[in-house]
Length: 201
Image (spheres, rainbow, N blue to C red):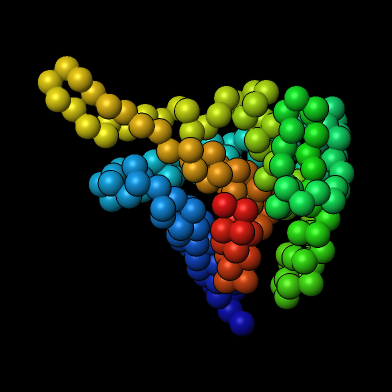
């Protein structure tokens, strides 16, 4: 293999990952009526901005805590991370009042049985914790990402009706998770991230 082949392959991989990141963000917001009404160029610029916010947050906590392990970061921030059996707990959740990240044991066990990608099975618990860790950062440091953006839905003279897109926080959380764990969005990873988000919707 020539020396130029490796950089080209790496660049192609990065291009696929970037394209898949954007595609995943689109899919997460596919049912949001406000998002679907936006012009295509506004959608792209919005998603890129939100993805960057998630990635910047990941870079910040990695520098601050000297690790990319979301469980260690969570504990350093004073959070408890544990599993729980509860019929109302579908996947995982961040409980701000109790400073907890709680993961459904049944959901985790089911995913372990289904995931075929070694890249994911090795990082599965970290992936779920990282997602909830971002929501803690929103609550304590960043402010909720979705509240930063308002969109004009309707206007009649001076009367303007604006709406927000709550799913933008999930897009940012996904970007945070990918950057923190160093996940490349290869097809198996893409499929898994899509399924985990749709199941928890």
